[in-house]
Image (cartoon, rainbow, N blue to C red; front, side, top):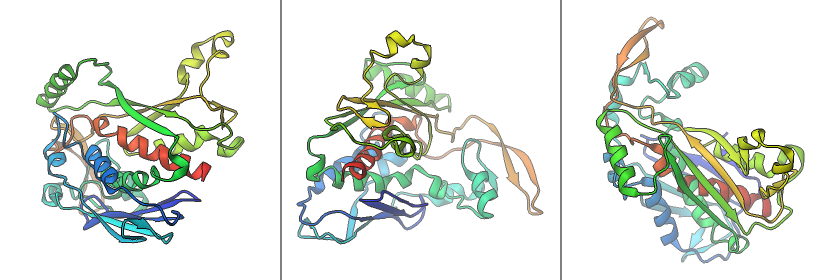
Length: 320
């Protein structure tokens, strides 16, 4: 499915190396004066081009939104808001040698097994490029009156299994990993403040379940927890019962909600790996693969704004 949300829905389209990526937002109310600088700021964070360890690709991404419908003179019309962002920085030729190779850690083989065809240029719909429409949509949704008293803030808390209090130390660490031709993962923490009590439903539509589904839809996401999370399994009941996680029985309590999302290392690395290659006769052989190109040493660095966007869209659909 390419559509999420039942009150304010977002349908996304596009592949990482196609003409463009974009979306259609339906259910957005009329008469909202929109601040497009908020959209540009969010996209700049998503691109990661301001990071000291930004990849060449991140630095090249100058994303500019083209608004196709649903807005006039900066005000929402109540009709579907359609938008697109041209893919101007892609270099599809970099992937030609991978046309029949299934890169380790990527969705290449899974897509081929399911559909019998795949877009080998950067991963197609499995690419992190497809998170862009969510960031755009969330930047608009944040401006709705019902969201004004709710803050959703995400930040990186761990990289490569380590916590860094000094940004310079983090940069040195990442450059060292990059020099080795390797990559690392990270953990993003997100805090939701100001959410009123009573948001969420029992059983199948619990608030934490909706948040977990959204977070685990982000490419490279490998784990989700909220509140005491997995640590609760190591606590005594007398201790755990004192914790206020912001959610009880799947329903918000009015307290702050803290959640964490784990992201795996960027799978495209220079260090040689074993990979599967589909042969002309349909058989599969094993080959040595070293993936060059413009890849992030840590994809989690760009993830906070995406986590915020996914949480924003979930909350808006539950309270809207």
